[in-house]
Length: 316
Image 1 (cartoon, rainbow, N blue to C red):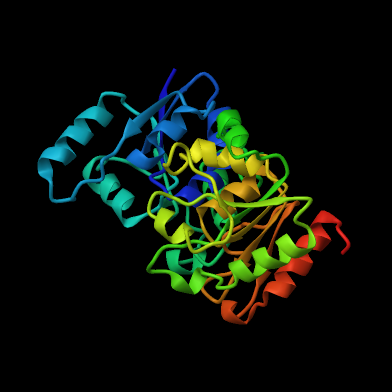
Image 2 (image 1 turned 180 degrees about the horizontal axis):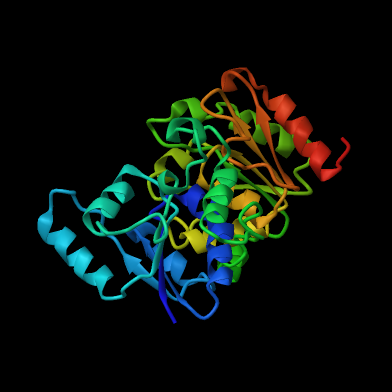
């Protein structure tokens, strides 16, 4: 039996996207121990993953913190990993390869850089979709892939029956109107207009809810929807996944919850402006689709509402 290391630091949407790749790695290493190096926000989540044997915490302290780097190296070296799959493919993990695994070869370290298609640069390769890049990386590393292109995040939800009972949630639509403060171009500005349309025309069928993150609770007061919290605190990732899984529909900006929704198989829409494309981030699934426009401020609430009615087979 060998020890295998997967590196996946984040972010939330990327964690959902990587679920299929992690499953394929595990199934190709039957009998081996699968370890996963991640950061604090995802440490407890990955403990629930049935394809991971052990989760290792990376505090991601400064690269110049030699004491931390030494302790991380000491912790990692004790497992004598025979293969490392870098699914983060970041400058930090490239740094780890040079510093923590200086003897690693193409045969022992799988990453975008070590599996680049012949004649391609990393910049060109990164223009492909996220899931196709994972698929190429793993196939080039000898992995037979069955799940990489169709991630399954169904291992993530936890029981939120008490939360749903408290908020009297049965049939409901979840909105994710938030985004990172430095990525305002990803934020659709007409959620309250959409909520008014839903409440006016199909209110009797669905409640409209939001589930803000820890840093979004204050902003949530500006949205005219039921705010779902757990004793005043933001839902954790597993609780959020459960809320999404049991929903009738999801509307979201291009954020982590949108990717969770896509890979839980729920019905929904992600709203995309010019910041990237739905194809590149691999978000469209059988039930989860995207609306792509050049300027989100020009996407009307009426158009989004019409798409919701179409997907839910509702006539008004």
